[in-house]
Length: 519
Image (cartoon, rainbow, N blue to C red; front, side, top):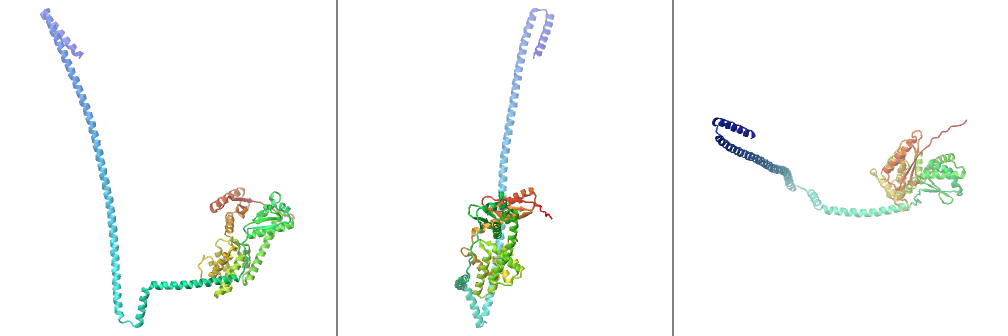
């Protein structure tokens, strides 16, 4: 704008100079100047007007641009809104289409099932129609044949028809007869059992798990215990029993669930007290001698029992096994005396019903023979007994009765049932057994069985009423660290397999002996 004023001023100046020089008149010059000033003023006004118009035009352009931007934003928002609405509508339509498709598939499945059911019903109706057709032809043939029947044929047909029509009444009549016969047979069976029991009087009493050894005086207790418990520990180690030394005057209690161990311990302790020499080496010697004596006693017990039963022809080794039953109990009942009782009762029952008395007596007497070795051989005592009977060539009926007396194999003959009945009579007699005792003994047996299941075990005894397991290991197979590991493994296995009150101490002992002979 200043440039425009400058150009205009120069033009006016040049023009004024020219006029001045050509006219030479001052007045004219003033007039020209005045005119020029007016022109300049008009020019400035025009310029200002033009600037004002340009500014207004620029503002209008800005307003138009702003309006255009706002409109564009509104159009975009509306487009997005329309897009969202369109998308929602499409999603709704898609959902409706999916639902319709599912409904269609469901209806199609239902229609297929209806079709299958219809076909099955049609097939069933067709089958029934065929059956009815066959029955119709059969009845038609029967009607044709009736005219040709003899008197006996007609009677048979009539009886068959009556049986079919009155089958329910005939069954009821049969049941009534069967019930009457059963009541009479039960009375006769009870009388038979009473007569069999009356013919045999047993003095069996339940066995205890403790034995008392009488002492000449209480001073012997200190010698039995020994210095630092050396003697009593050696004695318990060798016999596998608990030796209880308490305030009981003139007596020591031997506790253990195994009758053989208890008897060996009792006889050994009596010998040691009588001899007066009580020290570990002497204890070991006396216990070994007593065990040999007990082996001889077992044979004597077996021979005596067989003689009392009146049974002959048994193998000597089988008689020794029978003697071992003298040192076994079942629910507190001595197994050898129980076996003799079952044998006598079975013989009396066999006599009542007219069967072989000797065979029934032998089967009853030997029915629990498997209990003599069931702690050494895996399996139930009935099946173990069957194998023993087969080994020694016993009669087949005796073998079968032994195997079947706990129904582990099916019963086949009357001797089987007689032995089962005699066993039940002997076991259920009041005072013959103690249920709690067998639970206790089984727990002790399970403790010893778990301990003996590991490698490298020499002996294992459950002592302290099942609160401790004493395990002797083979020193050439188990070292000191192995003994520690073994005690931990035995304890964990006891925890996982047994249910027991309180705690159980696992005591693993490893002993190395060096023996030489001076000549």
